[in-house]
Amino acid sequence: MRLLTAAEFRSVTAPPALGDAEIHLWFFPHWQKQRAAAEAPAVRALLGAYLGITPDRLRIGRGEHGKPELVDAALQFNLAHTGNALLLALSRDLAVGVDLEARNRRTRAVADLAQRWFMPHEAQVLAAQPEAAQQAAFLRLWTCKEAVLKCSGLGIGVGLSSVEFELSAQAQVRAVRGAASWQLLALEPDAAHLGALAWRGRPVPVRGFVTQTIAAAAQSG
Image (cartoon, rainbow, N blue to C red):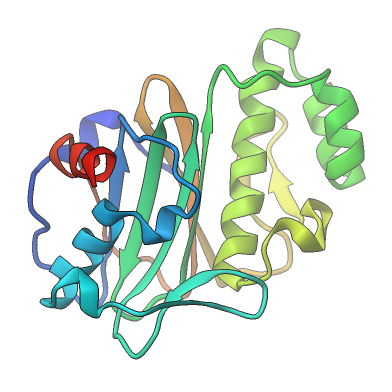
């Protein structure tokens, strides 16, 4: 699984052109938690900019399992937020799913959580890792599972064990087991966060951006 690092997230204040076979990621490192992130002024402004319309003309609905989606607009998106950071993925024609987690997220014993939420072989691989490496490996697998489930539109309500991954002996995520059509990209937009992006189909270019300006607009909006 390829990794998109913080060095590959360019700092910009306006969205560049989005090709038909391309995915853009936007990282907001100073996000003020809001009740409905998809309706936040900064998110609406960015979606409107890609569509060439004013934010007030956007119609955001919900899929059968609650995934936010644009109504009557040729743009796919998904978002995730944790603490004071948010990640937004956009594509013209590809359904996308993203997840974002703080590296310092406090959890119970990784082995216990893995046995509860993951498939048996996944839990076994995680338990075999050195204790110092278990937390990061657990979060990486967790974000991949969430990204795939969010992309599918099902969400984590169906259970994280409903999607199974092939792992290396070092607990590195290789692929979705039995589903070669899934594409996965590991994300490290800054030193404090890690995440994952998922989509179905062939590999496509993914470009990352980070902005302070739009995040500030969300907090004042």
